[in-house]
Amino acid sequence: MGGRFLSIGECMVELSQAGRGLLRKGFAGDTFNTAWYARACMQPSWNVDYFTALGDDAMSEEMIAFFEDAGIGTGFIRRIRGKAPGLYMISLKDGERSFSYWRDNSAAKLLAADPDRLRDAIESSDVVYFSGITLAILPREDADTLLAETRRAKAAGKFVVFDPNIRPRLWSSYDVMHTTISEGARSSSLVMPSFDDEASHFGDDSIEATIRRYRALGAPNVLIKNGADGATLNFAGQESFVPAEKVENVVDTTSAGDSFNGSFLSKYLETKDAVASAHFAAKIAARVIGEHGALVAKDKLGL
Ligand code: ADP
Image (tube, rainbow, N blue to C red; front, side):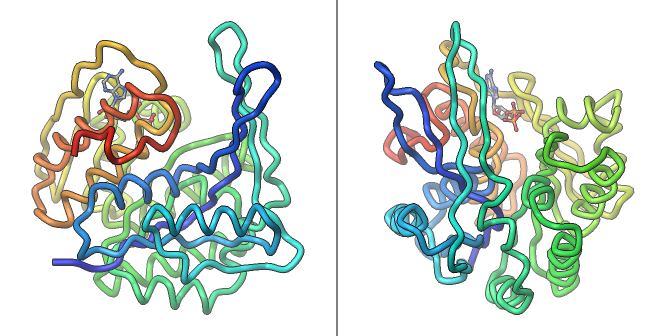
């Protein structure tokens, strides 16, 4: 079996400290990270495509070349004259990381402003992946456009996957955040939240409460990630728990959830066995947090 996996969102330029005042350039962003791990783990019969908007500057060109080198399709990407990608910088002080963002004017904010292109990309795909960050960066009316398309895709029988990835700072208010994330979940076949985020921002007092809330919205399948405490799955009412792998030396937890999502989906789409897929994803996520950076190379994933 094969098909097309389409991930929708924003990839940014990442600048990190390289010592002696030097900065290292990379590319990352939640939905792109997930596409990266999906590509690393999926059979060649699957296409993995990224949907975003980029500009016509040198950074946009480099980013596209980077996607293609990783085997990720770029054919649906919207290009906008005069625009550039967003950027963030990671600073390190006494071992603690902090992030500065320059993304308010990024090309990706316009990714849903060409509805025909968005629809074409989704109609050409079998699996559609997006996140709360994808929705948060869009103008209100464009978030509604994207939600209309994901609802349409779900109704047409496509597998729509949503990670709420709650980032309050990206939203204009808690109200808008709650409503829009709930709409994202409603339009999905599978919701993949992190329990920490849901407890902090929706006030859920247990994993069960998070599962109930998303199932009540109409998501038939929910997979809750809970860091070192493992993952709880409810697929069509059937509940299971899958422990995390033991990691002796946690180097960098960036992308733990994104790598879990991408690797889970790669197995699930082939086997439809959610529990076995979650065991596989826990192994991949454990490898990822044992290495530096958001994007760990395929040869270090133990595949
Ligand atoms: P997010 O990065 O979205 O907050 P989590 O922290 O829940 O996601 O992590 C996602 C997955 O990564 C977990 O379900 C688990 O499999 C793995 N993981 C995360 N932290 C650890 C850890 N300290 N030890 C082992 N596995 C971990």
